[in-house]
Amino acid sequence: MSYYKILGLDKEPFSTSPDPAFFYESKEHHAALMRLMIEIRLKRGLSVILGDVGIGKTTLSRKLFHMLKERTDIIFHMILDPNYESEELFLESLVRTFNIKTQSPDPSILDHKEAIKKYLFEKGVEEDKTVVLLIDEAQKLNSVSLETLRVLLNYETNEYKLLQLVLMGQMELVPKLKQMKNLCDRISLKYVINPLDEREMREMISFRLKAAGYSSSVDFFTRDAIDEIYRHTQGYPRRIAMLCHNVLKTLVMEKKFIADGALIRDLASRDAIVGV
Image 1: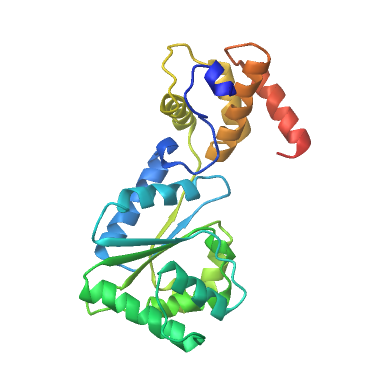
Image 2: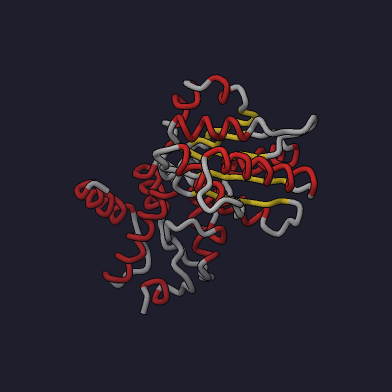
């Protein structure tokens, strides 16, 4: 039996997988989502969402997809790992992502560019669709790939951009963008996601437990435990999830049902020793 069943849960509450059902919408994540929705509806072109490792960018991208997937006027595409060494490889990836059928059995770089251009005009003008491309881990994009994206952002009507590009990345993306002024000038939205405050962290923990089926009025965490969790995680959602996951497993192994501050300090010190 899984540990969460023993604790009265239906699911794993603190998985670090980007499941939209367990997405706690903090004020920062809500603001990022709403701003993105506005930019996409207005077809402004380039949006950049930044944040440190473990802040929740990938889960945010899945939430955005979940919000848009049912809309018939939006075509949503996503690239999760944009680590391409050459322009040709990146263009080939875009063609596959857009599900474009190329005419030539051995298409050139120019063929790929023309095919993508044709696709954007067909979907954006003839079919009146909004084409969204979200690239996660965008700090991995090299200068060649960024230049390719800049060219795609040039495709527009008199009123709007044909491609709505969302770059989600760590702060290392910033100097890369600054080195390309002609791309940096095209940024319509730039938003930095900050960590949760302590109140939001408490709400996130409670939200995830309820989403996992917990219905008891008994709290797993004492007030002292919550204080220690925040002290050791600094409000980063992934750190919170990992620590809380370890707490629940420890409760089961030690046949306990409530975690106090001492338990959190002990687990956090073990994690520090192994470099977690």
